[in-house]
Image (cartoon, rainbow, N blue to C red; front, side, top):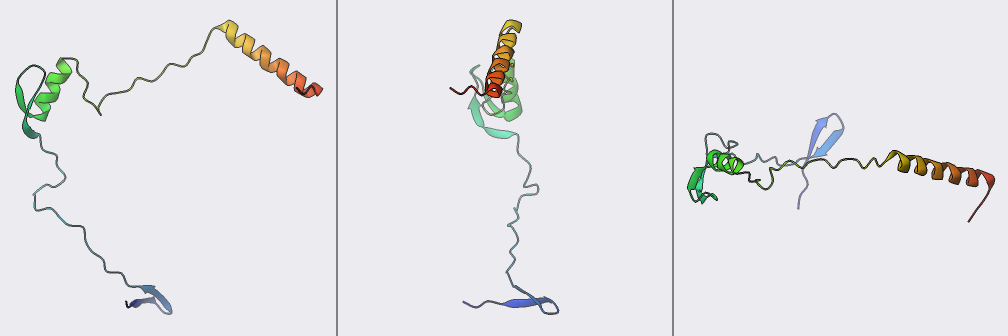
Length: 104
């Protein structure tokens, strides 16, 4: 195994690395996702070859496509005013006990 060094500036060296380019696709637009798919049956009994039509029928029937659902945020449990007041009073009492040196 041989290590090849190259001088990048006077008295500055680094290990020479072979740079390989990522393989390029032979397709004209390799990053474009096609709308076509194998014939797939939707719950209405019809077969669809277009992703757009397949999804439109699913949405119209009230179905959720796994991975595209929007998760509703959980509401904060604010509690009642009485519970909030009781919690604040309990914290206040505990802080007073700690300041007074009470240890349990």
